[in-house]
Structure formats: C-alpha cells, structure tokens
Picture 1 (cartoon, protein in one colour):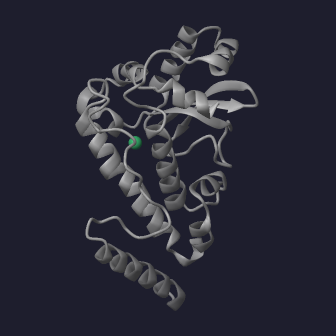
Picture 2: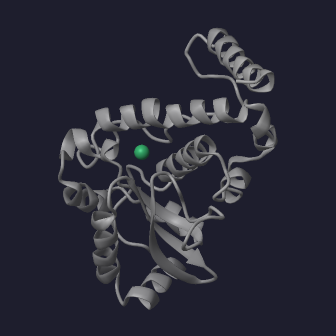
Length: 230
Ligand code: MN3
C-alpha cells in the first residue's frame, strides 16, 4: 500500500467513525437520506407481512443508503456526492465502482418501490396507462401473465419493471440492484412500476414460493401512483 492509498482508507474510516458517533440512532451522515415508509409497515397485510416490511425498509434499504454514503465519502467518488439520486443512477455505467452501482441502485429502487405500492393497492390501471398496457399486451390479464413470467424467471436476485419509452410500455428485468434508468441497462426506459424479487422481499412469509409472492403483489400495486408515473 502506498501513502496515497493509506490516506484514502484512513480518511474514509475516520469519516465513518465520526458520523456514526454523532447520530445516536445510527443513520450515517451523508448526502443521501432514508425516508420513512409512506404507509404503516403492517398496512399491506396479509399480502406482504409487517415483519418483512420492517426488515426490508429499516435494515435492507437503510444499509443501501448508509453504504452509498460511505462510498461517496471516498475522495475518488466526491463528484457523486453532489448529485441527486436520480442523476447518480442515470450516470451509472460499466466503469462505476460496484459499491456505488449496487447501493445507489438499491436506494433508488426501494424508494421507488415504496411509492408505487400501498394499502390502497389492487384493482386495475385506468386511463392512458390502461390503454398503453392494452395496446402492448392485448389485455390487463395478458400483461399480468407476462409480468408473472418475467418475475418468476428472473434468475437469482433482481427486479422486474414496467417501463415507458414515449407512450409505449414494456416489461424488463434487471439483476441485483440495477435498473432501467442506468446508462448500462440493456433495455432502458422510465420505470412506472417495479417488483423486488430478492428473497429478502418475501422469504419470511412465502419461503421459496416466489410465484405466490408475485401473485399476492397484485393486491398492493397502487394504480393511482403508477398512473402518475406514466
Ligand atoms: Mn429489497
């Protein structure tokens, strides 16, 4: 290790120690913040259980935010600390450090997810979004079938997305915490809705039965919120 590398590591280490000490409740200081869930953790019962929602938001999502703040505290990532989370995610390409790619994606994806599901979920899309879905897939039921296929065949951890390009919608999936806004995405578009198919999103209640979780999620998609994304 040369002196520059040592100083970088020492600097990052001391920054983390200082910020952890100054916040009693353990949210590390940094430009990126964890917002509270926009609904009660138990509000999606019985479709998504309270314990899963608490762990998912308070532990998993928080870890992405904390680790993103640590990553942008590294001097070589300083420019990223000044970006909004949207700008940062859109800038992510194959050269972006993995700690930034994974944690910025994790933060964006979960924030988006919480704001497209809710206790008023279920039912069907309306208006222009419903028309775009029917135009692309033939019917809402046909869309549900395609979505279910994408969600259950995404190997390992990742997300399924409904995206928009112009007025056209499409389904895509991404591995890990990637998303369709990233510069490196194979299929780009503006996300309208997403489903987290990491095991942490469903394992407590559904264990290995991902298709049951994917089916239950139709009760929590909030079509008013998703329609506004269109
Ligand atoms: Mn998750």
